[in-house]
Amino acid sequence: MLSILACPRCRSATPFADLRRLRCKSCGAELSGSNPTVLDLIDVQGAGEVTTTSTEQRLMQSDLVARIYERMWRPTFVRLFAGKGAGAAVGGIAGEVFIHKHGLSLDDRPGPWLDLSCGPGAFARALAAAAPGALIVGLDISKAMLDVSAQRTGGYTNVVLVRADAHALPFIDGAFGGVNNAGALHAYDDPELVFREIRRVLRPGGIYVGSTFAEAPSLLGRIAARAAGIRRFEPAELRAWLQRIGFADYEDVRLGGSLVFRVRRP
Image (tube, rainbow, N blue to C red; front, side):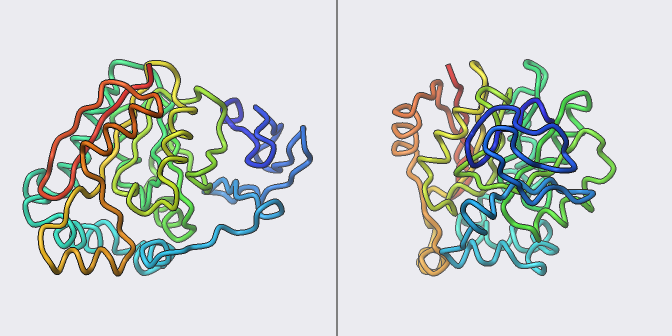
């Protein structure tokens, strides 16, 4: 893990000598450090705690939402924002996990693998089971989500959980063989910055698989999405955006009012 970390303040590579005391050898920044289950890389001294600007972001910080997210929260809001066809098309979250794993082509390239905005850990657990010899890094900004993820991924020795901001990933260039990014793109303040960070931390040939909402299936869904600050991405817009940033081989599959997309860093 030490070999792929970068300082979130000065961006120097491999800045830490010990995960138990995260003091950057280049700029002297001292980060929150680690507890027994989560490596906290939020730069409190440099930028302060990251603020939440939308209803969606605030809800993701809730302990209650984190506990019920996989079984109740996510399925309910996928149906609301993407229509009944989205969940039925893939058989719920288990089917969506299968699509993401297949898109990442875990057997065709070495890790490590980044599960970006990992939430309570459903995808991280699936990746860890599918690639037991590879490092799986689950990253989220929500303490509540990471606490639940730590409880549920405790049986996987190849999972490391990191608290950090998707807009400033604390990793060296080319650190990962693939990035998984399920159901979070719509909640980012600056999706383009996140796209650029994902491309940076992918090695050449690395795969980025994500999912997001494409269109509102009903008036109620559109009203709820607007109230929660949910952004939607048309497939043509998303393809052009990712190509402009430097990704190649865009493909997607539509699931009701949502989509799963896959691109490659050339």
